Length: 251
Image (tube, rainbow, N blue to C red; front, top):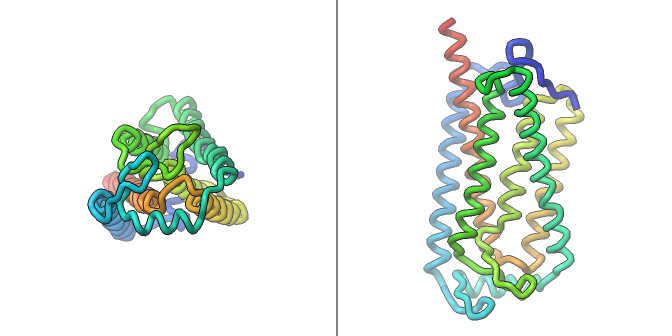
């Protein structure tokens, strides 16, 4: 893969895979991504409130209460439980972790070569912050369980809302497309990253949905939250790029 680690003064990543964008275009895209992100996060918040107030019944394991009970129970009975699929998707959850490590390594290499955190590509720094926020969301919902799994895992009752694997996949995998599109030169590499990300993400989400280890509403929540976070990440990168353009105009 042709990805540059050279200092920004010699070769900066192409902004958003479209060559140089004007500041007003970046500003418009930044605001639209920010608005969409806020709307999706708001939808996730509303969904979480509804989960705890609409059709709540003690239909879970050990009598735990579940929101949208009729829908969740119907869908769970429709799909059944497939522990092999659960195990496969569980192990494949290491793929987005590996991608996080790859971009973390890229940032570290830039830091060592450029000898200053301020000279590391802003989108990589923002990406690191974004990954931390995703992890924080996971930890928060582990400590404050909204729903519990419809099945016991090794005899234990585990929190299931939102689906942590789905959240991880849908938060991290789109950043692979975004970063490859910005940094790779070869068009085939760009297309391969898109195909791989879409196919892998679809398999993981569908696999998690029909494996029977989550309520359907857990998956929906993860889709809303991860999409919202990714939109906010893109908006932040565009803001950083717009700030860079403004700085160059003043020089």
